[in-house]
Length: 205
Image (cartoon, rainbow, N blue to C red; front, side, top):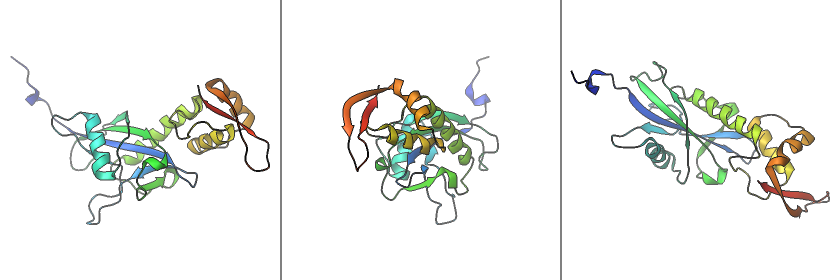
């Protein structure tokens, strides 16, 4: 007897994307969609259901473009969220994605909220945000600004400031310098600003 797919349940597949950035106020923040005025969907991450014949990556870019007005990003798969009760409309798997971008890559009127002050989010989107933040923080503990929030060249103090925002903690300057220097290349140039001593400029190795 030939096995057929009709014998198996077909959960819906959705994509949701946590787009993280650092605001001018110095907060690690996430892009959200506002609550719908008709009392429908509450505040949530940009997302959509996968269409027939569509790749996951295509659905992600479509949702960012049509729902958040964002283009030109390159989100990566983060994790599959498959709790049985994550959506009260039925069984829905979410293939979550993450991206980290400069604030200038987002529309001026985008809803960007600090991850430390999230409102109640739809479904399990708070878990998706937490998972994304944990992944990005792990990356920032290992390498200098791996997601390119800073434009090179930069000083070590500016680099440390970005890492402090992402990690949510103060970093000892000497310890940070020792950890990051093996991954940096000195440009041979100095930044002179104010009355302080000129600061050496670096780029990522």
